[in-house]
Amino acid sequence: MSRTSSIRKEPALGSNESGSGGPDTMYVVDLIENGRVVESRRLPGKSKYYAEDVAANWESGLIQLLQE
Image 1: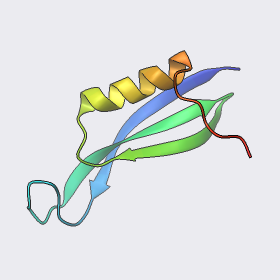
Image 2 (image 1 turned 120 degrees about the vertical axis):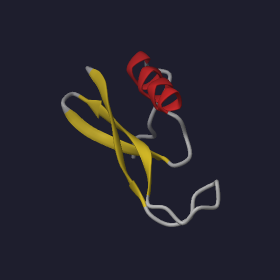
Image 3 (image 1 turned 60 degrees about the vertical axis):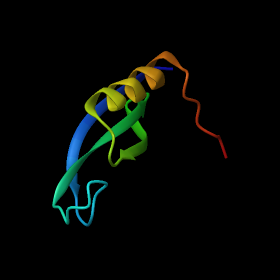
C-alpha cells in the first residue's frame, strides 16, 4: 500500500474567521493511496503548516479512513 499526498490552495468564498467577506483561500490536502485520491480534506482557516502535518500524518499511517 503506497500513500502519498498533495497540498493545494483553492478559493474559499464567503466570510472567513477574520470577518472579511473574502474571496479568501484555503488549503486542501488530497490523500492518495495506490495512485488514487481517496479523500480531499478541506482546511478552511488552517495554516500551511497544519496542512503539511495532515499530509505527514497520512503518509506515516497515523490517519486511517473508515472502510465501508
